[in-house]
Length: 152
Image (cartoon, rainbow, N blue to C red; front, side, top):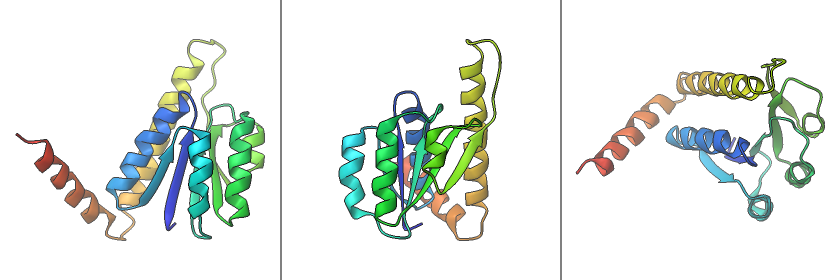
């Protein structure tokens, strides 16, 4: 992808923002927004090789469908990141990342989802690091630059 756009609303914004930060460390051009209005305006720069990652545990937020539609109108590709259930957001996506984490206990199910999602995103990050495109070198250089800034 030339640019990677990421959006998540509510709790989903935490995972989207953290993954955006990791992608930027690998040298990807990243556009992250937790506000659908800002993302909608940012979509004006979308090109055919750009990708939108939409994080939504339940996949039922109409605002996100509109963003997906706008993104696809500009010939970008949409990837949804949702629970492994049928949901409208998956229907609006070109590809889906599915998180399987189910439990009958309502206080446990969201914890399992977040844990499984984090594990899946960590795996994707590791695969991107090791794909041979020089991303691991980019990561090391960026981490060194960050350490230099953080040191007194």
